[in-house]
Length: 401
Image (cartoon, rainbow, N blue to C red; front, side):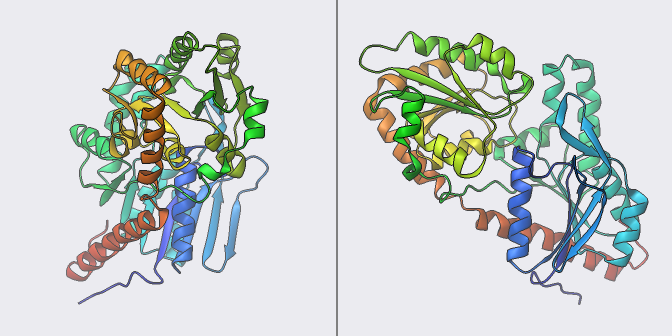
């Protein structure tokens, strides 16, 4: 009988986005990569070379990195996709065969990694990190939605498992015909994102006094984030400002819509993209997090805001669906019901005790979502794929994946 141990396995992670790019996929992959190394696995990271880097290979003991040529993603010059590298990956994996391959993205590099792994009989696990099937309607490409869904269904059904970020995403993908779905979820760093980082001096620079309320939005400033509702939310809230409590809006992030948002919301404060302690300080110095997006696979910013002690106002999707109870730990509106979204926001602003309670409950819930638990679950899925492949190869030596 063939057995494999979780300890000291070798796994390959293939992604077309990586730090210092600022997005949920890069953040999640960074956490998973660090977690596998911390747990004494050997990890091969395969990704596109970013601006200023050269394609090539580095080996730092347990951590190896193969950088392949890439190009800017159309419409997102700050993001890359990797060119196909089937031949290069086959040669690499014939020399150093991983126990399993994890594909985080479905672009040309991900496709070629799937092809190489299947030709070599290496088990593949995929992750569904970005809801590209929804993006077409925001970019005037509605005719491409059906082909996009067909591609995603074909791609993910080639893998042994497809890992999802949330239960709502899992149900949607099942309706699209994607099989073998398993929930991975996401964690949050409750030491970094902590209410103790609240900074009165920073609030003063925003023009917010001790009793004023700061609304916050963090995310990519792009069409698929439903930002017109952020504008309407701010317009509705400004009517509630009075001599006793003033409201401020802070917008963190960058993207193609930043300039137009600054013109339409002249009273808002735009900080650009922030990371690390700078971002954590901004979260903790705000009071209410406004999250109008309808296209999230998870929404890491939701749990970061909760961990920072903010009441989150969002739709009943993804991270918000899993971790927020309406008017208990935030505001949770039915999907696409903008009036309910605005009503919840008004309730949070006008109900001092309700807001205080929601913020406390949000922090409590977020602190149950540590990354070590997510990494352990991820290891389990990779090991399951390795064991499944070992049993198959033992029973039928001639089979290729």
